[in-house]
Image (cartoon, rainbow over all chains, first blue to last red; front, top):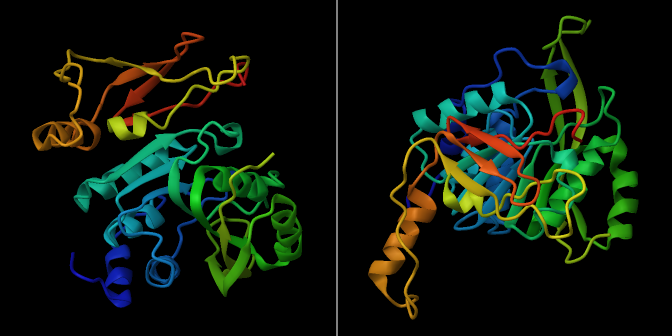
Length: 214
Length: 91
């Protein structure tokens, strides 16, 4: 497989169609191609957790991270999301890009508990942050991801929650490494946003998977 | 939905016995052409491996449903995507 450069990956990801009408309560917004490309490049080149591996993308939305993983040589990718409209866009993206090793499942991550323990090598996700009447959802996604992954979980979380996450990671006995501090420039996708865009500080974190989580 | 994806899924209808809800029974919209039972000593048989690879990764169920073996609850598959969402009164 031809080795994909970061710039090439980013321009491929710019072709990915995203949400037509993002749903407020689900915190839907597309992971920017630049951010997705940088994340995936690090996961692939520094940690070798993508090529020929099985990958799950929790809260996949339109599939930016799954598609990028497939382009970097993942063995098999499964995207999981609760929203049928997002998955439909994801599906059309896959068809257009002619990807053969990507599948998706419609489900509620919050009700999976441990039914998919140790089913994937790697979990890569940009989970909801818990800002829309769904406080704590980021930790539910994280816990479920850690149960599903055999090797590692790569996730994005608000920098303001870093201490809380460190505490939980210690409790769950998983190793946590902040790989980068990012700034999300979320455009005013919802009508009530007063400013044109909102800046949120976000940590890109790698968690080592754990065998047993209570 | 590929067979490999199906292998990862289980039903989480509340009240199932531990380890229950797996495997989900595949019900197809039309008759299938899945191969018969595997023969013993097949792991080194390249032809067999090719067929397994084909069934696991190259066959997609587009329309049909998955049935929970314990509760009987059906989860629909539409346009290749299985829907495991429970309704509000089920969850």
